[in-house]
Image 1 (cartoon, helix red, strand yellow):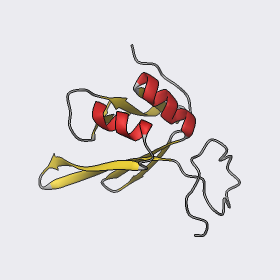
Image 2 (cartoon, helix red, strand yellow):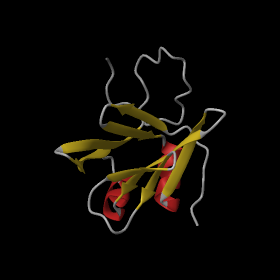
Image 3 (cartoon, one colour):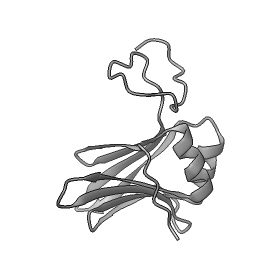
Image 4 (cartoon, helix red, strand yellow):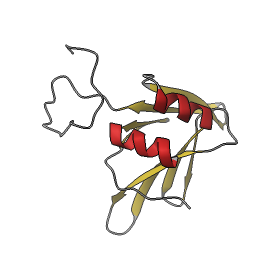
Amino acid sequence: MLISLQLPMKIRIRDNSIRLRLTRTEMDIFAEKGYLENKTEFGFADFVYAIQVLESIENLAATYIGNKMTVFVPSAIKTEWTTTDIVGFNNKMSIGNAKTLSILIEKDWACIDNTSNEDQSDNFKNPHTVC
């Protein structure tokens, strides 16, 4: 059974690219459960986005079915990502017609300048000291 967890996993979508960023707590839960999801409510419908371990794949992949986007992560990548200092992984997934979907998953680093005044207490320490 998949568990829905309402955490502030960040998503960025631009053209044919998807990027998910997870905080420390989200990484811990993903390491243990192999699944996280969140949603944006529009009143008439929800946009759901998730990250899920999938044993049967070798590279990052994604689907969009019924207002839900899921990024699938191979088990080996999940283990390496959640147990090391590796920041993230990416893949260019073929979507037909000579097009690709760029998929990136990363640990959410704290911003150096934090001009948005966003709570970043659960973010990973940024190794850079200046922008």
